[in-house]
Image 1 (cartoon, rainbow, N blue to C red):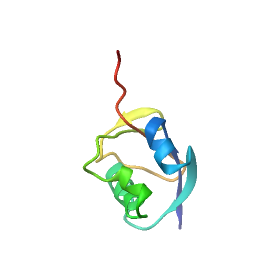
Image 2: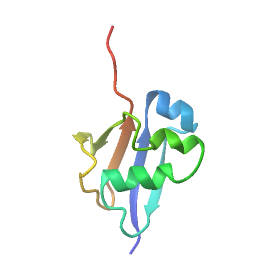
Image 3: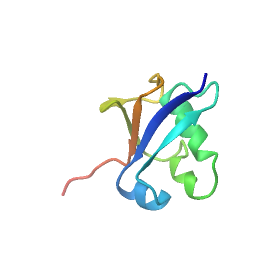
Length: 86
């Protein structure tokens, strides 16, 4: 069975990727935020903004989540750079 999730991109990440989000069918083994991030980074050049060395935050179903957080079919996963105040 294919697991689908909704992935959202915010702020400078959205600009770098040229997309605000997508529905994505995940391959077997991509079942955590960290695995999803690595899967997206492997897409190529522009997607290197998702690489693990970058300081990004994630939320699963609108709750802050670490790289080890599990994701399941139907979840909404959002990625965004840290916000700085001024």
